[in-house]
Amino acid sequence: MAYKKENDTSFTLGAFPTMELLRKKPEKVKKIYLHKDLTKSEDIEKIINLAQKYNIVCETNSHLIENISKKDNVYIVAEFEKYIDKIDKNNQIVLYNPSDMGNVGTIFRTALGFGFKNIIMIAPCVDYFNPKVIRASMGAVFSLNVVVYDSFEKYVADFPKIDKYLFMLDGNNILQELNVPSTTFALVFGNEASGLPADIKKYGTPVFIRHSNEIDSLNLAISASIAMFKFSK
Image (tube, rainbow, N blue to C red; front, side, top):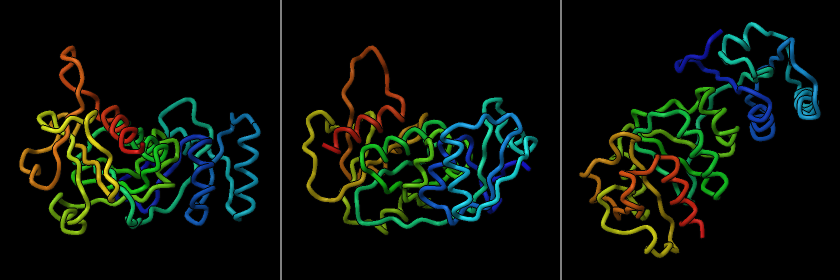
């Protein structure tokens, strides 16, 4: 069994994401798989106890784990049903066409750390249920509200009044000089390679993170982290 985007289920890879899934969405868990070489630890015992509490079957299946993870250091996997989230009325992180699973997972984890629980993704984008994204997020995805829109225009139509801060290399507002708004806002970040398209400037406030001329730009996950730190103050 290998993960496919079109499947109705996905998988956690490793103990920590599995624990987060059991803590946040136990009703979605179908089964937990254990590797024959798994070493029992306090964390593993907690996972097995939670599985028993929620009547979730634990099965030894090394071949399945190796087929899904493609790595040597994964010894526990949970299979769960995919689900649909809803965005609430709080602040948002918007990712426009993100294409790197590691970046997206890191942003998810950082967003949760700074109190941002609403994540909007504009397609085409990374499949956020991919086990690699889930692992990069360390299971943070299970504590977030993640919704994918077909276009930025459809997103704007649903949230026309929220203040949008568009992070762009040619933004004419310097992040370090901005005042954090008291109203609900969205921080919008573009694709790793191409950034945000120029024609969406009309939808919000273009922002630039000032840095030295020794580099041409910042990594997406780093930019998002800096912005979230600033706007969480």
